[in-house]
Amino acid sequence: VISQAAEELQLESYVIGGFVRDFILQRGNAKDIDIVAVGSGIDLALKVSELLPHKPKVQVFKNYGTAMLRAFDLEVEFVGARKESYSEDSRNPVVENGTLEDDQNRRDFTINALALSLNKSNFGDLLDPFNGLEDLKTQLLRTPLEPGITYSDDPLRMLRAIRFASQLNFVIQKKSLDAIKENYKRIKIISNERITEELHKILLSERPSKGFALLHKTKLLKIILPELTALEGIDEIEGQRHKDNFWHTLEVVDNISENSDNLWLRWAALLHDIGKAPTKKFHKKIGWTFHGHEFVGSKMVYKLFKRLRMPLNEKMKFVQKMVLMSSRPIAVVDDDVTDSAVRRLIFDAGENIDDLMTLCEADITTKNPRRCKKYHN
Ligand code: CTP
Image (cartoon, rainbow, N blue to C red):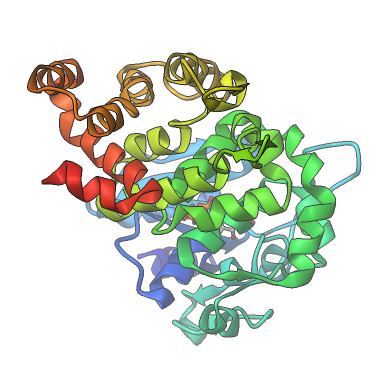
C-alpha cells in the first residue's frame, strides 16, 4: 500500500532504521516501522490512510514534518528525507529537505541506516551505502560519519551505542568507543526521560552487565547513576577488606536476568546495595559494616526514581520494598533463625515473596554458592 501511495504521489519511499535491522537479524516482532519519503512524509501518510480499507487516523506533527498511523498492529511513522546540520551551541539541528543518502548520513549507526526500497523500479533492494549489512554480520557498531560528530550532534547516541551493544551483543568500534570517552560529559544536555528509556533497555537485555560495564568504562555512569559508581572499590584497614559492591551488583543483575524478565526486579537488583556507600564504617572489633543500608537504600530509590523521571508509583514501591528486604533472607540463612522469623519474612514480603526470593538467591549465589544451597534445602 505504501508503495502504491508513493507511486501515486510520484515520490520515492523506503523502509529504514530499526525495522530493517531487526528484520535482517530475525529479531522478534516489530512494533513500529519507519518510512522515509523523498518528499513530504505527511502527504505520504495521508495517502496511505486513504488507500487502506480502515482509513486509519493520521497523527500529524507539523513542526517535525512527520506523521504516524496505526495499521496491522504496527505504528507506521512517516518522515520526509532530510539533511541535518548541527551547530556547537544548539541542541536542535538545522533541517533541510534532502535525498535518501542525506537521510542515511544523518543516522546514528550503519546498522540503523539500512533502507529497503518500496519503489516499483527496485522494490525490495537494500540500499546500504556504509556497509551496514557487513556490520550486522560481524556484530559491529559503527557510525556513518566520524564518531565525534555523530555523538556530539546528538549525545543520546552514546547511550544508544551502549544499549545496542548490550541488547544485540555487538562490539562498539574502537574509535567510536574512544569518541564516547571524549564526549561523555555532553550527556548532561539530554533529558532524564530519554536517558531512562535507554537504561530500561540495557536492563532488559540478556546480560545487562555488558551495558553497565561499558557505561562505567566510558564514565557515563558516574553522571547518570553516581549512586552506583560510589560502590566501586575495596577498602582495606588492618588487613580487613570488604567486597567490591559495584562489580558484585552487576553479577547480581546478570543472575536475576537469567531468572526473571521483570524490569522492576532487575532495577531492584541494580539498586539493592546503593545504601552501602553512605553507611560504610570500619569498627576495630567487627571490621566493615553497612548497618542500616537497606533503609538508606530504599530512601535513595525514591530520589533516584524522581531524578530519572521514573514513575513514583507501585513499581517504585516494589523496588523500595525489594531493596529494604533484600538482605533479610540472608540473615535467616546466616543466623539459622527459627521458623517464626521465616514466617514473619513471608508475611512482610506479601505477594512479592517469589520475587524477593529470586533476588536473594541471586545475591547469595554471587557471594557464596554453598550457603545458597543450604538455604534452599
Ligand atoms: N535515530 C538516530 N539517532 C537517534 C535516534 C534514532 O539516528 N538518536 C534513527 C536511527 O536510524 C534509528 C531510527 O532513527 O534506527 C529509529 O529510531 P528509534 O525508533 O528510536 O530506534 P530503533 O533503531 O528503531 O530501535 P528500537 O526500536 O530498538 O529503539
